Length: 365
Image (cartoon, rainbow, N blue to C red; front, side, top):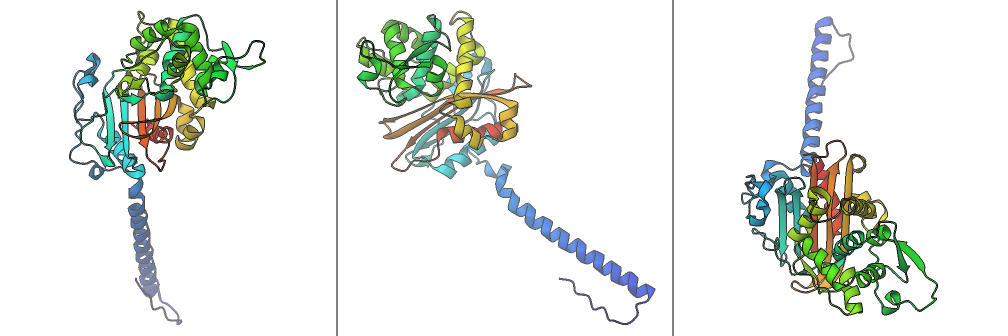
């Protein structure tokens, strides 16, 4: 601290100049001190190169145009996004989890993060493992099948009871029973199990199995029994298993690649609207509003599908978010994001919240 000893007697010009100089030095010193403290405090909110561990490489996975993501190793395409993913896993520390960020246009893996048995993993062993319960991500298959077979987003189905249950009385209504109805888009966005079960029963196991295979869901099974078929069509079963990679590739196929020989053009268009509807007023709307900055919500198209179900290997409550973010002004800038967590006795942060936080990080790139 600089102290001044100014006497009350008359000050001459020389003394006045010296006093002014001393005051200037004092103010400059104080401002530098405050600025240094502020800068030091703000560092924790930024990701610097020191946050990226030595086991994360910034090398780009080669030849992304030829589905090179199938041969993923420990390298990551975007080291900053990789560090952001690792930070969030450390912050919320789910017992088991996998996060995947993929460039929607090229299929290149931007970043991934994994926790297994309460520890961060150096190898992405969950990446291609299709033994995780798909939960309500199975509704992606059911909605696609409905659209391929003459339905549209405004088609209506009986709505009996709650969205999250699947009792036989909900899918086998009594004759002349008065019921409410729900549209396909709302059944998808709000994850209505009975309506999706009814769709699956109407279409039959062969059509459902065919659509699942076209989407790359190799470990899905649709039995002939009506109630079991309804379970598989709604995701209310551990019969359908999925990997994070399969979820990401299905979204990329439906919303970005859109091959002409797989589905109708209207199916692709309607499925995009269903994903967007989930964020507008569906199961992910509240979490995305809480986690994605207002600016990004206004400048991006964000869509997704959520799902949750108890499962085994590993044991716990599976919590999925699978979706995308796309610039409204630069459509070529788009990302697919899949977050799968397996919660223990204590629930960690929602997967859709983590997805929203990573969308903010990606939007800065």
